[in-house]
Image (tube, rainbow, N blue to C red; front, side, top):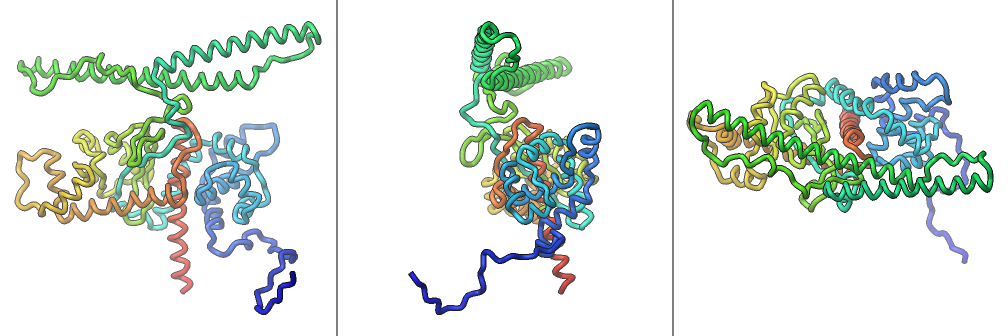
Length: 465
């Protein structure tokens, strides 16, 4: 069928030959994220990764650590955490090709690089935060702390009690032994038929998989036993402290007596067979098998200035550790910090590093909002009998307290949205707390790189105008 063209179009010829610019950087527009990231990584300290490769005197030369770090960081910036998708992008995406400079590492190489250099890659977070500080992005006047539940690379259905894990361990041991015995008999029969020159000393794939599953199971059993022991010891200590106080005062203490240490043993407590370090976490939409990602965010710039992964289902123990993490990362403490009721405890407030003023809700979010709307600002002096909780509630009702606490919802929660929703980084691909901590660090590092890039773009546009 002949189509009569009555409309003029912009010229289109898919077979047109082009002479590309000799410098790959010219393939991308000025100010492109990939070019900014490349320059940023060139200024980072990768000596720990270089030292690893310098130890190897023989073997084929590895890919350059700077190139591998650029591919990894740019992939996380674009919401591509899977090594197979990264390898495909290096072949098909112009920005990735510019960063790789003609190299094409396959997905196994990318995956291995990420696994080999867990600590150096985690260390990039601190370096990027310092770059944000030097750029004037991090003020640390007010920070907001919160946690978000991240899915692990494991299923809820793979949780088992200690008895079930022990039973599965015994079943796998029998399966492995039976398979090895069968293999020995098969080798003997083949030796009889073919002679003794056949090796055949490597276990079959299914045996190696069974051995791997058994290691995860034993890790789970050990973790449950360790947690059980810690709970019993903590309860024993609580009883001893109560008895000591009663002995010193000569009076029975009021309140409920601590239950016996045996009551701390929970036979229904479960561990995951796929990732023993992960936990069952409650979210707004139900339960997930996952980890608790913590982040401290600078309220003015939304730069993450402290981050960590914890296996605690709640946030109550994270106040002091996360504020100390900010000190380690930035070299200084923020002036003020705001958190929701999940972080409230008198012990946590007392353990927080001195010098930072805290604004912590003592009620759940909806109750706190209702109280702030309904109650007028307090007047007069604080009663001498006021507890630490009373003083915190009173401070949040002041105009200043309301203003500071309101900043929390406009900073740290949007940051989690930018990471989990905008970049689709809502789950971990690796297993084990150490590897997951590195993944969370990469997510937070690339969040800060994006903030730094946008900040620099504004400066370039302002200078150009």
